[in-house]
Length: 143
Image 1 (tube, rainbow, N blue to C red):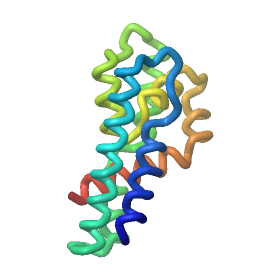
Image 2 (tube, one colour; image 1 turned 180 degrees about the vertical axis):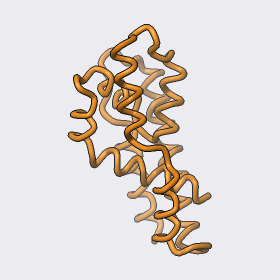
Image 3 (tube, one colour; image 1 turned 60 degrees about the vertical axis):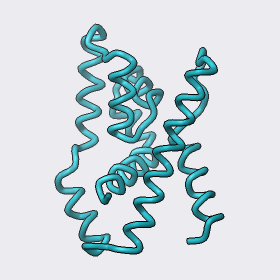
Image 4 (cartoon, rainbow, N blue to C red; image 1 turned 180 degrees about the horizontal axis):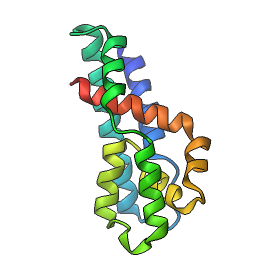
């Protein structure tokens, strides 16, 4: 992969991770969201390049093992249902940002998941985003 391809991959992934501008977002919040998305994208792309250059296991086998042990997307559905049943349990913005980072999703994705009745429908409608988030989490663990 040449530098331009790497730069394009990072840019594309960062845009996807950052998502659309949330309504009411301040300038500093936007800077933080875009910076976090950029850093995460850079980490993922670099991990991917490192894997390509020095694989310990065949990538397919490593992914299979990871899929068997990773937290299920069903956990997100259960979490969203609990938040709908008890809105007072909704995590703080810092906790929500950490959860979004852990799951490689945007805060807005998690907020919309909680806002959609039933959450499973939102998950179904956003399978591509969930697949990309799983790819990001897998690549993080390769490092």
